[in-house]
Length: 106
Image (cartoon, rainbow, N blue to C red; front, side):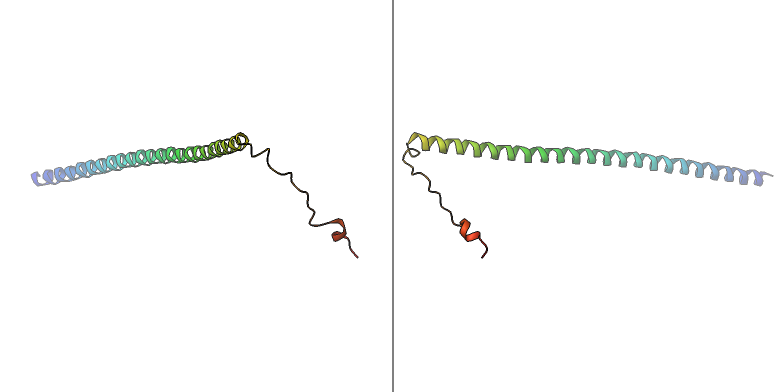
């Protein structure tokens, strides 16, 4: 009878150990899943912020280029007016390279 009791105890211990292993593995899988989701979420957020900063950088570069062009044009026109070059320029000639006669069908 004592031998049967030890066998029952060993079976009970085996079931307890298996149950503890299943619970431990389940908790580990759950914990790793939560960590994976958190890391993926953080990575996605950083990627979104980086993309927004790239777009802002491109917009600011474009705006800077436009402002530089306007400043250059304003300075160039101002210099032309200041040195009197506009007053000494000749009037533009009107030249017709294609006339009405050239377009007529014979």
